[in-house]
Length: 273
Ligand SMILES: [Fe+2]
Ligand SMILES: [Fe+2]
Image (cartoon, rainbow, N blue to C red):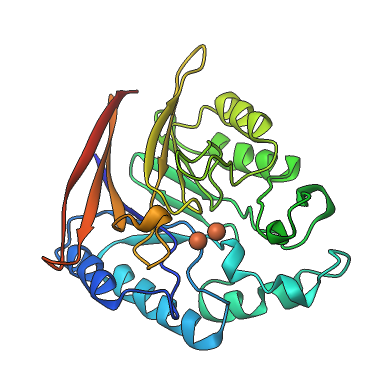
């Protein structure tokens, strides 16, 4: 079994709730997880001190578990390239300096292969909408990224769980009514084709557990909420605990209780593999 703590949208900086982060660090410190996955929006504005706090969080996690992290739209300095024409170097320089040089890391653990995909590309013409607030917010996956994931999975041992870690939610949020990712059908179709067992994402700031059925097998989508004060609808923050077993994937949402300064049990869903 692979035990995963899936957290997202910590938004270090002003929105961060230090007590909730401390409680997450306590969960990790208890040594219950093989993997800690952080699916982007580490920071609020990609500022140095915010990303430095993110680095400290990952260092602590790394002392107790294997870690994987990908950037979110808040970790990209999209305003360094507001027309989407220039190089992405300046946009990711701070993230690379503090969090990870690799924007699309691969993590291999016994029985599982985790592929990080960067869906936060800054300003790109095809992710713009008529809403100016969407500038630099909507995510996207390119065909070359899917092909890279395919190449990684093809070198993994047969029977390994195939896990994608990315920031933007490919399914509509219940309260937001929105997909974080553009061209979601194409992305979900590609995941089905790749035999992806599990997607770890965030961005919507509302936790969710979904199952997308395919003809052969399905994909579990774990959308982690946020523990920052940006939780959608003023709802309590949350994290997801996931058990990947040879025959099943179980996602258990843990809900932050500010009064108890601890995480309480939330919904649990189990899916056959
Ligand atoms: Fe976020
Ligand atoms: Fe986001």
